[in-house]
Image (tube, rainbow, N blue to C red):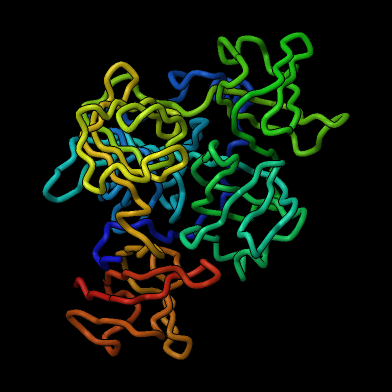
Length: 408
C-alpha cells in the first residue's frame, strides 16, 4: 500500500466515551428525547454557518482530522454526539465514524474547514460470544467483525483478548446488512455506561404492544412518548435506540428512539465511505443506506467486485436525497492489505528504552524499520513536531511507525 495514502488512523484517547455518556445522561430527559425523536432537524447545530460539503466516513488521521481522504481543519468545528450533546474536539478518536459538515473542499490540497462533526457509533452494550479465530464478537445479539483496520482503545490491552463475555463496549463501524454484521472501525471499553445503544433494521413491529425486534433483540418502546417516535415507523426501517442497561421480561426497554442515519437533502459536494447496503446495478445502489445514482460516474478501479456488501468510496453531490456520483472507488481493490495511518502533532511521553512516544494520545512504537526524513532518531524529543505513518500493531492498540517526518 502506498505510504502516502490519506489513511484511516489511530486517535487520541484523552476523553473516554464513558465520560461522554455520563455527560449525555446528565442532560434532561426531555432534551435527550427531543434530540432522538426521529428527525435530524431536531439536532442542535452550531456554528450556524452554511455547509458546502458533507463527508461521511471514518477518522483516518490527525493533524486536523482526516475523513474520506480530506484533511479537515477542526479548530472551529462544533463536535457533538449523534444526539446533539456537545463535546470537546479532544473527544475525537482514530477509527470513529463521523459526519462532517464542511466548507468547500480544496481539491488540489484535499482540505476543507469543518463546521460540524457528529460522532455515530453503532452499538453500546455487553459482549456475548467471542470467536477470536473468526475475528468476530457478539454485542446485544449483533455480530461484529474485527479486521486488521479495527482500532482498539488502548485500555483494551491485547485487543480481542480483552473482550471477555459481559464486558461493556462501544462499537463504531459500518453496517453490512448483506452479511448481517457490523464491520468495526473502533472498539472502546465502556464498563460504566449508564445506557446501551442498538441500531439496525426493524422487524416484527407490533404497534399495539409497542415492540419491535432488531436482529432478534426485542425492544419495548412503550415508554417513549408518541411524539418522539419516528413517523411512519415500519418493518425494514432503520432505527437507533437508547436502552436501559437491564432487560425486563426478556425485552430491552427503550428510553429514546429515532430514525436511522441523517442525510442532507441537498449538498453541492459530498463523499461517502462505507458499504453497499442495497444493489440493483452498477449504476444504482445504496451506500450506508443512502441511494446512489452512478449512471454518470467514473470507476477508477473498474466495476468488477461492485456488489452488495462491497466497501466503497463515492464522491459527488446530493440532490433530492440521492447521491449523484461522479466517482466510485472500490476500497478492497484500490488499497489491499493493512491500512497505513497518518498522524501529525507534538511528541510526548518519549520512552527511548521502550521506543515509544505519545502523539495525540496515541502510542507510537518506533522500534521497527523506520524511514526518518528531515531528521534522525536522535532528534526525537518531547515537544518536537512530527508526522508519523504506519499500520496498527497486532493487537491494534498502538501505531507501528514505518516513516517519521520532522515537520518543525
